[in-house]
Length: 293
Ligand code: PLP
Ligand code: CA
Image 1 (spheres, protein in one colour):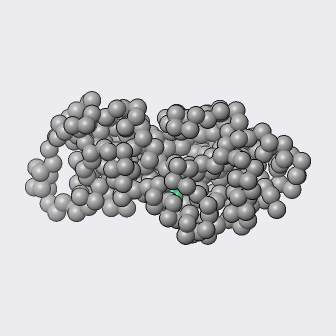
Image 2 (cartoon, rainbow, N blue to C red; image 1 turned 60 degrees about the vertical axis):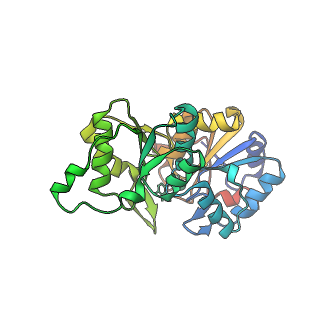
Image 3 (cartoon, rainbow, N blue to C red; image 1 turned 45 degrees about the vertical axis):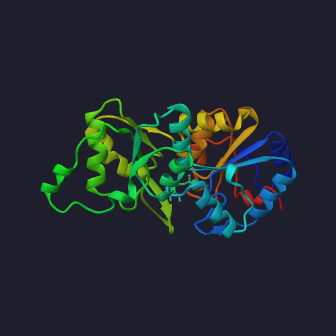
C-alpha cells in the first residue's frame, strides 16, 4: 500500500500513470448532499490535465439524468456519458449483451431510476411503482400468476418493496427457468445519515434464498459491471484507476478488473487497521481533495 497523503512526488508519479479515473460517488465525491472539501478543484485539475473521468455508483435508485441533476446542484462538472450507475449498467447489459427480445418485458423490483434507464434503452418493463400497493389478504395471492411475456426480473433497491413484488418476481423466476435473474447490486448495507441501513443485497436475499438461484449482479464488485464499462469506454485497464471508499465493493472491483486502485478515507473505511484487512488498495490517500492543493 502506497500512502500518497502529503507526498507530492508520489502523487505526481501516480497521476502520470493514469489516463482514466473511475470515481465512486458517496464518500469520495460527496457526503449525501455536500461535496468533499476541495474535490471540485481536484476534478477540474484532472480534466485540465486531459484525464478521462467516469462516475461509477452502485446506487440503483438514480438514473444518469437524476445523477446529472445532483452534480449540477452541487456545482460539480459532469456529463451524462461520464455517469455509470448500476441502473444504467443493468439496462446496457440487457440491451447489448442479452440482446433482449423486443416482444419480452422486464419485471422490475426497484424505483424510478431503473424504469428511466430501461426506457432510455427502449426495453419494455413492468412492476416497480405499478406494484407499490400492498396485498391485503391471502385470497389476493391468486392474482399472481406466471406471465410468459416476462423474460427477465431485475432487482434493485426499492423503498417500497412489498410481498406482492417479491411474490411476482418469485413466480416468474420459479415458473420459467429461462427467465433471466438480474440484480443491480448486492450491497448488504448502505450508508446514510451517519449510520447504515439494509441495502439491496438484504432485500434480494428474500428472493434468492427460496429460489435457490443466484442473480447475475451488475454492480461493483462484480466482473459483469467491469465488462460493461470496458465495452462502452474501451478502457486500457493498466492506465485506469478505481477510486473508492469501500474495500469490498470499490477496491475489490478495481483489483479483480485489473485496474489500479486508490482508497480514500473520507467514507466508510477507517484509517486504523488497513494493513490487517484482507483487501488492500494499491494506493491510499486521506481525501481525494488532497490530491492537489
Ligand atoms: N445503494 C443505495 C440505495 C445507496 O443509497 C447507495 C449510496 O448512497 C449505494 C447503494 C452505494 O452507492 P456508491 O457505490 O455510490 O457508494
Ligand atoms: Ca461509496
